[in-house]
Image 1 (tube, rainbow, N blue to C red):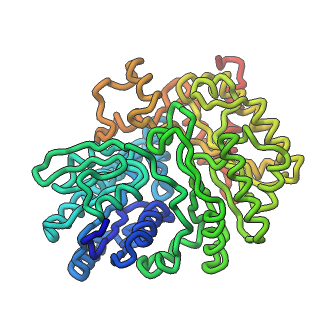
Image 2: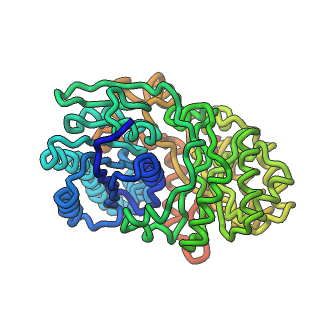
Image 3: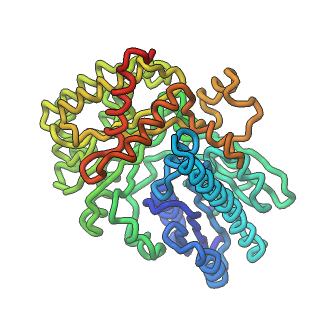
Length: 503
């Protein structure tokens, strides 16, 4: 279908500096479908706050784009963010024994809340600015935040805005082509302010997604090189068949796994490595190897990496269930940088969160990695501490399993990441907590109420206080040059939880 669109401006809304993979895949796809359309990417993640509005106005005036597409990564205040210390502030405010620290945390918390409110308000202001300057243009809004909060975003967008849930290639193409009904899952706020919800009729065929044309991306994205000094995201598939109780991947991407052609994935990695000097690749799938079929797909990718002798370190969220010693060796030989996995040492907690694996099998696979030559390399454990159903006994089990891993891989190479489950709308855990009365049935997941926000970061007492006090003690006493706060916190938890009085 021919398109009357001449120019597209992409605006990445403020977030911490992280490689904008999803946006680049969309821009690359549109270019391959319509190479005559001019495109440009404006990245607020690397532009000073005071310059963002001015830069947006300048781009609009210079380009007069027919479509302005916004990418919005984070919306909830407890979204993981390396640029703020919200977790420390919450811990101090709720659990510090020092009244001055609690008072300081209250003021710091208000500052964080103000920033959270201002960011959201400003993002909608950018959209309204576009509508004022370009009354006939189409506005598209996508990204992770939008996939979780699509109806809310649609309600606050200007008229004639398309709010895209999930992957955006097919939806963006349908907007470019002026289709009467957009493809994908889209909320369209028409020129009268009415919102129409279009459900996804079929999933995007990832076999259409060829290796990104990075020289073209370089030409439309002046800040591209600023994102190449850390892990660069490449995805190999979409979809997740699991139903972990705190996760939305299987709803946003669908339960059926869809795969890119392995050669296209490796072509992409090779260009990043050999043309741009990228050494670190993060495979951005929900889990890089999660089913028997996806493990076979992963093996094809690893074979190509080895065949071409591409010198990289790679990682991603990994499920250990279907990994054999033969496959583990290929992972190590192709540059596996770290094993990143969700971890709890209690089968009871695995089952409560519906993580769908066996602890004994997971530990046996980790032992297999150690025996296969992975010893003394990093194991990153993402610990959903104090999730619903957690007890002192399940925490003890987790600590004991992690101590086994210290023995196998070396204490310094095991990194337990302390985090608490953030309650997301539409997840089974949210439904359960509403039923239990922990959350009001009509609560607002995007509230500005700080006390509700703190409840959305799930860490209730009595264990919440024990964990928080351990974390605060670790923060105060450890030497960051020689110890990691996650390990220090677990040491203190071990001391407290193995006292006879703790039940």
